[in-house]
Amino acid sequence: MRRSPAAARENILQAAEQLLVDHGPQALKLVDVAKGAGVSHATVLHHFGSIDGVQTALAEAMIRQLVARVLEAERPDDPHEQLEGVGQVLFDAFESAGGARLAAWLELTGETRRLTLVRAAVEEVISGPMAQKGINPERATNLILVAVSLAMGVGLIGRSLAELVGRPPETTREAALAFLKAGLAAALNE
Image (cartoon, rainbow, N blue to C red; front, side):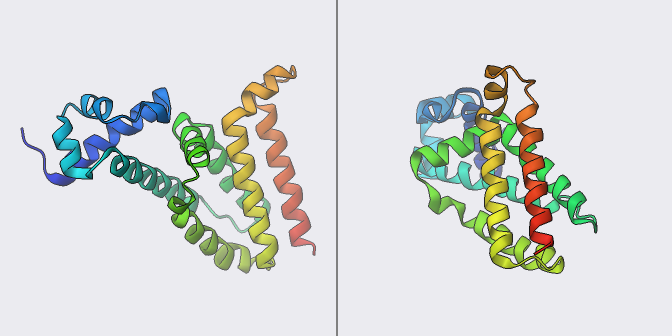
């Protein structure tokens, strides 16, 4: 059965994402992506031009998914409950194998140009929910930077680090959320 071009692209991206999640960015090779998608090398090249094209499309798709989850998070009126909800979404995203691998991949390759969707989402949160709570835009930006950095760190090494120091694996996440709540309380009281 022949797929539509959009379905063929999606199939290839799903195979690439599975390789990234299961084996890391070093597994994103043309031969492996084609094999995982059940298509020929020529099909991958037809739809993406190169393995770099696959990697770019995959990073952008994964970032779009992450941003959409954060922006769709419930936003209760209480800022602390709101932070809790958005924080949970962020931590869940980066504690998943895909989110953690995506963060490491983008950081290790220096592919910050792929983060334009993140910049737009941050600006949306700052000008929307955080502005409505009266939080200074600079303070809001800093709080978001810390939240995302903490979520990425917890996702990449939080569980292992907690276990290394003899704590339950969820300790790092709980401590990071407590830190964020303290930062929000300071921002609301300025």
